[in-house]
Amino acid sequence: MVAIPEVQPNVFSQAIRAFWDTRVAQAEAQRLKGVIDSGNRGAATGGQHLNGFLRTIVDHVIGAGVLESDIFLKGTVLPGYFRPTKVWDLVVVSNKTLIAAIELKSQVGPSFGNNFNNRTEEALGNAVDIWTAFREGAFGASPQPWLGYLFILEDSPKSHTPVRVNEPHFPAFDEFRHASYAKRYELLCRRLVLERQYTATSLLLTKRDHVNEQVNYTEPAEDLSGSKFLGQLLRHVAR
Image (cartoon, rainbow, N blue to C red; front, side, top):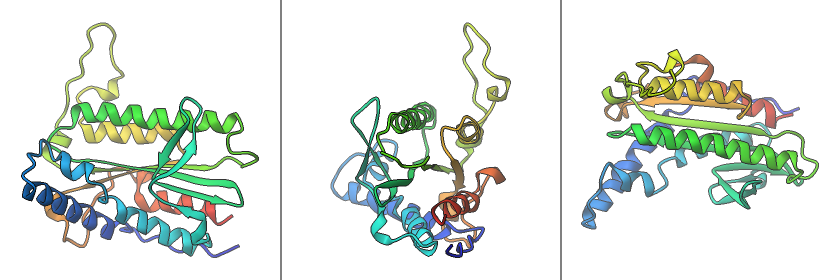
């Protein structure tokens, strides 16, 4: 068995820096084209801003003994059950065996409300789809794959502001009352694992004006840390 490379506590620092740098560059490109960008959508839809995370994960996975030819990045599709296929951000397939699949998502302000619901529905839908496809034999004789979900959230006053819950007919769970969007994402990521929708999840919070600091992101919960997420993946692929 290959020795698993050590995962440093701030393993995604360079990825965070690239995340913000790319968003700024994409927003500027939109401005120079004369495109009016509402809510930073141009930076979000321009792509590339999560590539630093992919590079970090790939480097560590290769260090754990996975062949580079077995790693497939953006644009790689896997079969689904409720739809023909789904594009995943990073997939590891070796000898026709699905080893791992990872979804990367992010959200920055100023709007957090509608996007939170959309992200929740996406995460749940993708998990149900792939696990049902797995149950129905879509991946042949593959053993249970490792399914990961990593989320980057802007650390801002709005993401930490308590949010009122609308309860016209039945009460919501207490933990959602007056919880900020940052707390809601923490609950989401943790419960996705508790309900076995994903093998591991991670939540990273980052401030855009702290991008050049040595520690440029925080982890609101130890069980959702980036280093733990990556460490679990490496232990799985190194088997």
